[in-house]
Length: 267
Ligand code: KIV
Image 1 (spheres, rainbow, N blue to C red):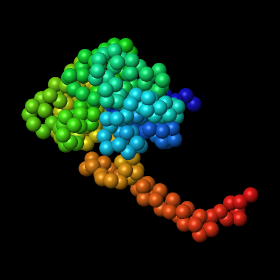
Image 2 (image 1 turned 180 degrees about the horizontal axis):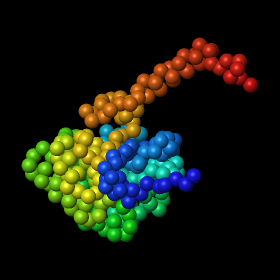
Image 3 (image 1 turned 90 degrees about the vertical axis):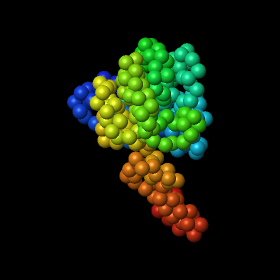
Image 4 (image 1 turned 135 degrees about the vertical axis):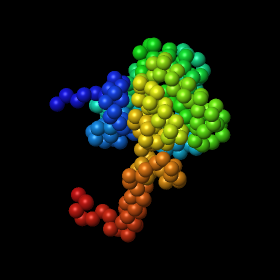
């Protein structure tokens, strides 16, 4: 049976039909295959991989080669979902030429179908140029973790009138230059809803409430693999961290006590 691939056009159609868009992050082949098989609309190879896979405190130090490596692993597993690769810090902010070449690498080498770029109106020219060469871009405004040191923390954005205005204006400008979708991170739900209603392109929220056209979460958070803390907007659907600990402890004890391997587990 032919599988109908999710494309940026499908995103537009889902918004038109009022169908919610489900997105999760993934960073490896096996997880991506499961997400694809269950019908996830899109898989984001987020630069959050730097925190949840490499154990770094921020997303800042991941580089292009590492992001391509994870994007390739995800793309090789995916038949249906839209694969979106996150452009890492300093891969697009320096100049347009770097931005186009790096965005293009995600399609050429990583097998992704779109890229995501953090930043509002100040990134519009760069985003426009990337789209002009045929690379679909998802914008990302609100809390933008690559600017963590400028922002001074992971607090909710869009709380002052000035920031609200900046976010509303940025959303419109990013739509205007051709983004196929806009990620809204950590903004008050009323603002996210107002932005979503004012745009033709779908918004994908994380910590942005119910008024968005879709939702995204980091897979390690929903599986309980990242146990250090749980942001308010995360719903944990499993406690895999605890399960892994229990299973591995059982194995450890079985080896130490000689209960593993058994006769049946031997040749
Ligand atoms: O890197 C990431 O995982 C993100 C989240 C906002 C989903 O960008």
